[in-house]
Length: 104
Image 1 (cartoon, helix red, strand yellow):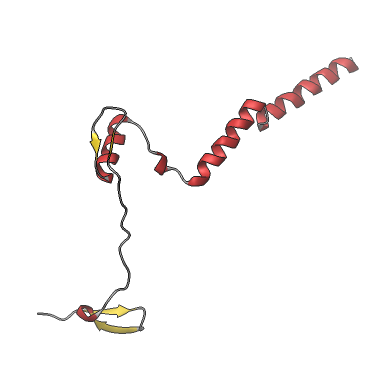
Image 2 (cartoon, helix red, strand yellow):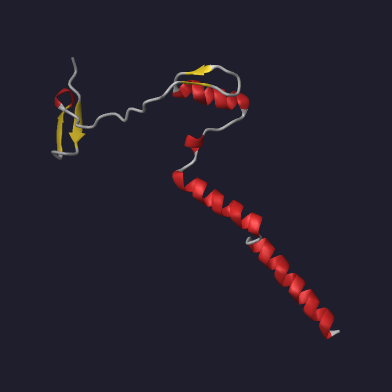
């Protein structure tokens, strides 16, 4: 059998591939099976979830980062209270129009 050599970044040497030992463990994502509220199918793994989401045109909350919900909540609050840039500009324009009408 032909020997294969690779660079070991820890020892900074070229070593035979069969002797190289990695201390890296693969990231294992545990998936909790659940029943889809959309069509009642049982989703058992990530591949089924991706396929299901694609089929039904939906997304999962895990597709968004934790800060996304906080940003969206603030954005929604701003829209509801009239604190967006567009709302502020509308109020400024209304004040300018009223001022111009008073000036004559």
